[in-house]
Length: 320
Image (cartoon, rainbow, N blue to C red; front, side, top):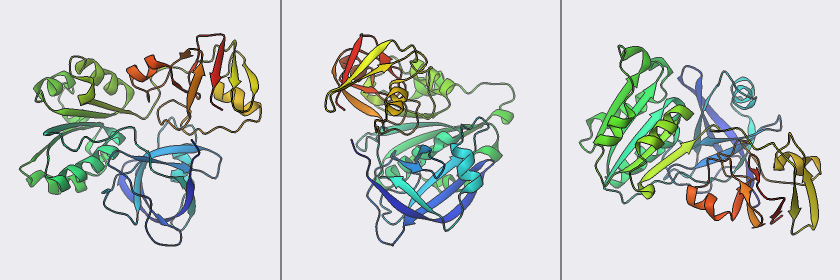
C-alpha cells in the first residue's frame, strides 16, 4: 500500500485540557479534503522525520477541515512533544489520507463508548455521527482530573439529548472507588456494540470484561503497544517482488532490517497499532506482536506488521 500524502495548513490551535491541544487542518490551497468516517485517523509527517497517527475528532460531514487533538505525553518519543513545541498556526504540514481500523457500526441499536484520557478523540467523532443518525449511545469517560479531560465543553450540549447518557469519572473525585469496567460491560444491553479507547491497562480490562460477548460487537483502539516488539532476529525476510533476501539480526525488527538495507517501507507508529506497515505474507509464519490485526486475521497469517512482529519460521516471504 502506497501512502498518498498532501500538504495542509494549520489554521487554528486550541487549548482543550492540560497538555492537550487541538489542531485544525485545512487544504493548503482551499477546497475539500478527502472524506473520512467516524473513528478514522490521519498520519502527520513531521519535519523531524517522525510519522505519528492522530484520530479525527470532528464531524465526518465536514469536508473542509480535519481536527485532531494531541496529548503531550510525558514519555513522548518525540512526536507529541514536537507537535506541541514546534507546530504553529500558519505552518504547512504533510499528512496521509484518512484510514480507519476502528469503524463505527452505524446500524447498531445501541452503542456504548468507553474513553480513557486522550482516548476520547475517536469516540467524539463517533458521537457526532450517532447524533446525526439519531442512534442511541452512552459514553463513559474517565480521566485523571476534570482539568485533564478534553472536550468537556463539546460534550455538554449532548447531555440534554434523550437518546444519550454521559458518565464522567475522574480519579480525584472517586473517593476511593474504582472505575468499574466489568459493571459497565455487564450492564450494557446484549445487542449493544461496545467501543473502548484509552491506556493499555484500560483496554486489557475491557477485553477481559467483554470476552463472552460476540467478537463483532466489541471494538478496541490502541494508541500504544501492548507488548514488546519482536527483536529476537535470527531469520531471513525474502522480498518476492524485488528478489532480495534480508537477514534480520538479533536486536532488530523486520522494519529496522529493511531500512538498514536501503529498502523503502511504509510505517508510522512503529508500535503495531496504526496499520500503516501492514505487509502481505506469501510464505512462512509470522510472530504477531501488533494490536491492529484481529485474532482471526493473525491466525490466518496472510499479513504482518513489520514494525513490531517477527517470524516463527526460518524464512518469511513478503510481498515487497
